[in-house]
Length: 274
Image (cartoon, rainbow, N blue to C red; front, side, top):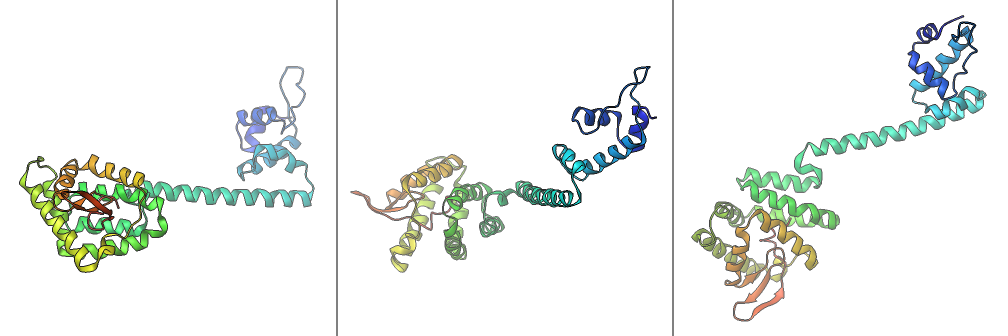
C-alpha cells in the first residue's frame, strides 16, 4: 500500500494535484488506516496516470471523468470533439499573436498595408513626422469607416506625392509648424496651397478636387485631429479663405466677399485626414 506522497511520485504529479483530483471527484479517496493515513493501491497509480495524461493533453477536468468512464467508441468521439476545440483555440491564439505583432509594428496596427506604405514614403521624402502623424491619425478612422474606398483614395495619393509641387507643400507646412500665427511662412504656404488647388481645379476639373464623400460630422472629427496636432492649421485655413478656398477635410471654393459657394472635398489638402 502506498502513501499519498508515494502515489504522487509514481504517477509523476504533486501531492497537491492528488488532493485536487480528490476534490474534483476524479480520483476516489481511499479509506484511512488505523493511524489516520490514506493508503493507495496499484490501481490508484494507474488511474492517476490516466487522469494526468488526459489533463496534460488539454482535456478540461470537467470532461476527464466522462472519458475515464467512456467505452472505446465514446472515447474516440469525445477525443475528436476535444481536438476540434483545441484546434479552434489554436487559431484564436494565432490571431491574438498577429494582433500583438501589429501592436509592435506602429502604423500597421489599424491601417491597410497600402496606407502604411504611403506614410513610409512621406517619411522618406523628408516630411515632418508631425504631419505624418496627422496623416496616420486621419487615415485610421477613414479606413475603418470606408475600407472599400481605400485603394481608390490611395491611388490618388500616390499620384499626388509624385508631384513636386505637392511635396513642396508638405515640406513648407513642416517648416511652418513651429511658427506663430503672424509668421510670413504661413502666408507663403497659403499662397502656394491656394495656387496649387486652383490650378488643379482649373486644369483637371472640379472633380479632381472633389473625389471623396465624407459626412460633415466625420469631416469635423478629422479636422479636430489635424488642428490638435498642428494648431497653425487653423490660421492656415483663415488665410486660405481670403484666397478663395475654405475648409480642411472638406474644402470649399468660396467668393471671399460672399462666402462658400459649394462643397468641394479637396485631395490636395487631404493631407492629414487620410
